[in-house]
Length: 300
Image (cartoon, rainbow, N blue to C red):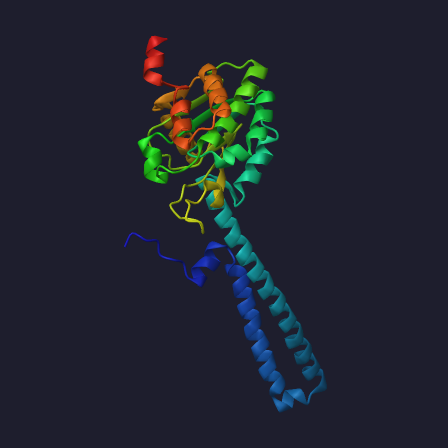
């Protein structure tokens, strides 16, 4: 109950508009069998003219049947794949990626308008920091939504032992460098933090949305799988799926609890870099660069 009934082979042939070709192949096969039987009749076989005609007939029919059958099989699989791809496109999925990093690097190489980032540990983002820097230098604005290690949401997903602040420092320092070199404002280059779980690892590069799920699986070292280790997909612009993922990102942004203050970040960055701090101390120091959005906006 509640499941779609699978089409049988006859229904698929009809759906793929191959019925006529199959009927022709079946008729030819019947004629081939009849001509073969006729060829076996002694009276007809002993007649040189008739036997030659029958021999030529079932030989040519056999070749035609093989050719037509091969054509039907090829068309069947092509149309089956076309329907699958069409369904994916209508749903909103344009490309599937097994290598999210390479897909993003390719898109970032031409990015000059907007970058969206989301995540927990920023492992992949850290690997793309130079590409992000170059995109900002070309003119791209940036918005990042992060679930930080001091939040309850982060601890529910990754526990309390993940070392992530070094990734944060590397990513935000190069973003800040690009911000200052381009003269962009804090609204154009903005990092906010949420205290709720993020379910999708979503990036936007200009008009492209690349997203995929966070998984609870663990790798051989018993660490949570990174989002880049699972599939991700490029979403067709203006599709319903695009609007859903875009709206989810904007909803998270509207419910963010903290915002990174770039002036304070420079101070805490230098302090962390100059001292040999434990992870918990780094987190406490980094947190000083974050302002509660409600308080800051109300004051403004």
